[in-house]
Length: 341
Image (cartoon, rainbow, N blue to C red; front, top):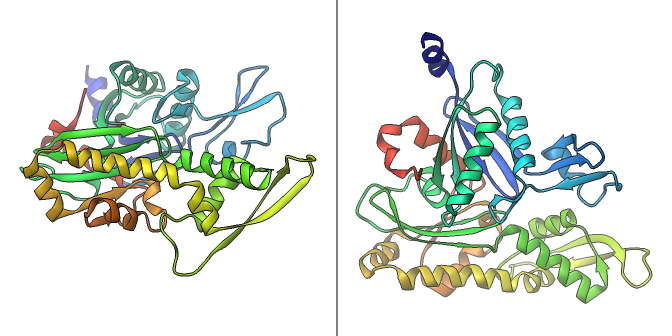
């Protein structure tokens, strides 16, 4: 009993943003301590793990038959339980010395539309990875806390968190989610759309990493003040030879138009289904844009055009959610109401 209490006192508290694209770990003591791609490389013959995170992402599209590079999460939830467990365990061991003896407590952020089965999978994967106790928090709530929004007040606050697999749209008031919608359209879908566009328009097959690089360099939701270009390379679908082309920002904007329209439509639906008092608050306070998708050039302007809302982008949108998750750990008495399990 004494040892259990001692280990509980010494054990680290960790916040985990288990994302489709990236996994982030945050410690209230040390801040952001890990930010790695949610990718695992496996040896098909032995089922052993060859690489995890940043190194494994380089394997995507480049592996021989005996090696498989996988993303164990899809659309914000666990698609491969065993690989997810191994990935979480690897990341925790990487940042927590002596985990064998002192297991950490953890708060994990999850999509707002997560099912009970998916919740159970997240909790079990963390416990089997060596975590002592697990709590869950919805991603939009975590983003609101991370951005310092007054979530405990009787005022409407709107959050749009665009990750890799899902876009979370939520209205928050009195430390609870008044309305939420989880759209399975986000950063990965933008990458896929760019790949399809290049294939259809230029008969060029490019990889996922190449499409993501084009999105990050020249992607935009509205026309840019100055045109931009980015060279992409891949395989000529006509004869199988290497080929490269120069993509313009206009090409990328055309490619990602439909996925962006789906995100904007989710924002409009949220406003339609939210009580008028909360909508009036949102009109005054504006909308918070978080997640990696917030970095897409001009996305705030596109949302404003279609919703008439002022859009605020968090100072560090990539870490908004995990910072909010970590902050809930720092003052659990204040934020105890936000946990959903």
